[in-house]
Amino acid sequence: MKTRKPKNLSTKPFGLAQEPRSRSPKTNALRLLDQHQIPYRTVPYEYSAENLDVAKIAADNGLELPQVFKTLVCTGDKTGPLVAIIAGDQQLNLKALAKASGNKKTALIPTKSLLATTGYQRGGCSPIGLRKVLPIYLDQSALSFSEILLNAGQRGLLFAADPHFLAETFHFQIASIGQF
Image (cartoon, rainbow, N blue to C red; front, side):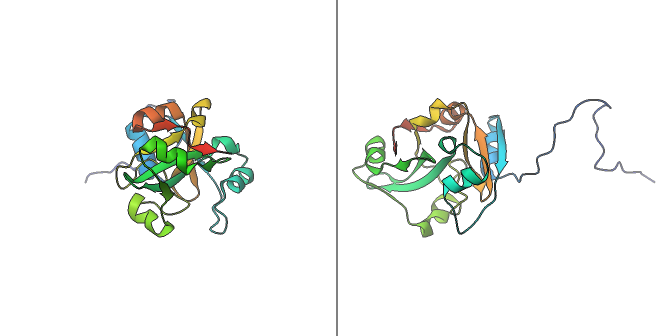
């Protein structure tokens, strides 16, 4: 009769430190960060369907608003869908985005089109792991931080990572697209 080793026992020698297991679910965005070996940390937050305001999310969770970035999906009259990433304390400058992306005009896509375009739902849209390959524009203010927070692809979950690594790895275009 063969005996089975219980699955929860470690195969590492006694005394070696093991990495703590993350209790956060792995989203497509987090899997891509792992695949590209980009260091990150997850930051869970309390999700509320009634309030998707990034300022409230930052305040309720003790986060610095300028470091919490929001992902906005837009469409250009020449390029079609594109993604803008701006700081939580800024608004999107659609004219600046149009200029940076080679469009005459840009506009936010309708909320009902978000899932089909990105694979993510409102309040859980990450710029990483999109359903389709889209051009992504990161506001230049992100580069002044060693770490920014972005949605991890699920409502109630952010990730923090170095914006320089993200821009280089995922080919984000850097542009001045946010305004106060």
